[in-house]
Length: 191
Image 1: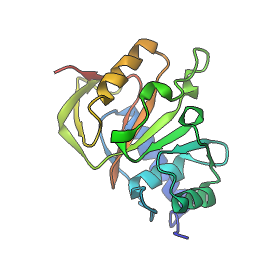
Image 2: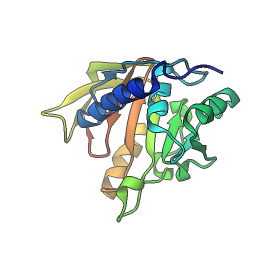
Image 3: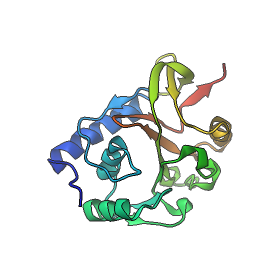
Image 4: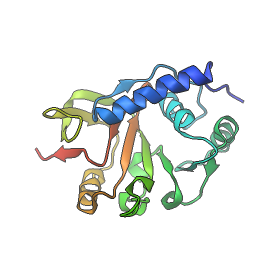
């Protein structure tokens, strides 16, 4: 069994602060302070996010339900693994090109829009100052971020969800060391 955080309380708190900053400042990657060992196919930064956000009171769907990763997550977090992504509080996508359609995840309901699935997408890399342009709360004018590895239809699917506001998906994108967030209120600007 691989170890998790070396100092679980302090490192999960520090990671949680970075996740809050990522949501408060969308499309601006944050380098995570602690990267735990991680069984494949999950990258270390993604595992840090999961170890921080998951506990026995939440449900998680894994796109690739590797036996070692399942055992690791259950042992270190107590999280409940669900077979249906529409029932998950958190969903981990490790192969973005084959992810389910965004509108098939739980988008919340009008009385409780916060009960939607939070999507965690593992990507090869992110590059600040290039790629797509974003605006919305937490972004003064616009923020540029290139996110590698997303399928061609991803942005059209995400744009289609804006008509269902306040319902939607809050998303974290993580590579090997950093994480960036795109809350449902962040909009991708057309070029």
